[in-house]
Length: 454
Ligand code: HEM
Image (cartoon, rainbow, N blue to C red; front, side, top):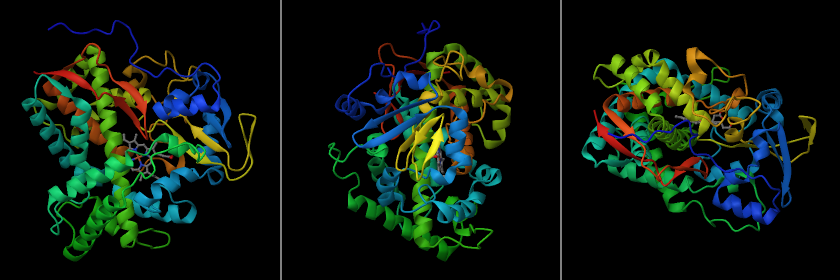
């Protein structure tokens, strides 16, 4: 079969802004694609500052300054006000948006949920989801939208590690409610997160109160039923969270806190992992040599089996490809904070209420940090090589680093290795995905690939 070779080209990227735009033009661009308001300079300079309406903002790309925001001066940089206002109706004051002591005890109570052992115990659910994906792809036509496929696959995982087997309701109903709930959070745009002035027209209501209420009711029923009937033979995220206790204060989560944190896992963990896999698969199609090497590794380790958590250590190249996909297309391409008081970052004054953004997309393509930043090259992560601290942040860093990072990496490794060992993926001319920033970095037009069974 003739393959579309990339002949040294770079995979799709966003054309960043090179001219100085007025507020109206940049706001219009932001409505289309938030990455288009990242100035080109953000990939070359340590900090870029500006003002949109009445909001002063700074985009910070210098690793030491990032370390100050995410760790050393953490108290001064809580999650931005808008992030909280938008997410609060959906996920309450859960670990994702809480601050100070209320965040700390929740994080401590939930940490044991994500130990390696607990994730490994849940990994058969990931392997089963990988198998189902293979069966669906097998039955599909020649061209498959791998973004849609991966959304279904990671949905299988997250719904089965949260509310599965809840006797109080049927699973189709739970799936439908989670689906609607996620679709609504997906409508939040970065435009909302950055906090542009209120006069800019925005979708008036992101959340339909009914869908939110339904999801919360389902979660409440599931929690009550699990409390009554005890945990499942292999404890899932709900069981583990029910057992969770802050070792310092001995506090445990009440019903509302359990529910909000479980819903947070669903919102934070489902689409992000699907995107990681979709971009990784696209990049494999983009670079057939990488794909062949990945397949050699997967086939020699798996020998026709479905990957399991125990295989992950023997799949280092798979991990490299995933890490490089997360560098070029970080699902959470923007992290935003609101300064509580004065500070200095890269010799620039920060004032109270300034929005401080970490454009992870630009950091990961910064010329002072990466050689050939726009090139796809999984060898950057060969032999366990770790980039310098605060220069590679797909999962954030500091105390607020993603609690599900290891869960996501194991899930992505199991699914990618299994798929690559059984199928070949080719690009389709003229249908390369375009990275678009909504709340996450999505491929516009999906990731349609030509799939052949091996
Ligand atoms: C590839 C997949 C994932 C990516 C790229 C990702 C990315 C991130 C990032 C960048 C943050 C930090 C946000 C900030 O500092 O403002 C974060 C936080 C968080 N993530 Fe993830 N995430 C992923 C998967 C997951 C999964 C699977 C779960 C749970 C099952 C999860 C749960 C959370 C939670 C609860 C937080 C808040 C932690 C805190 O503030 O203490 N994430 N994630």
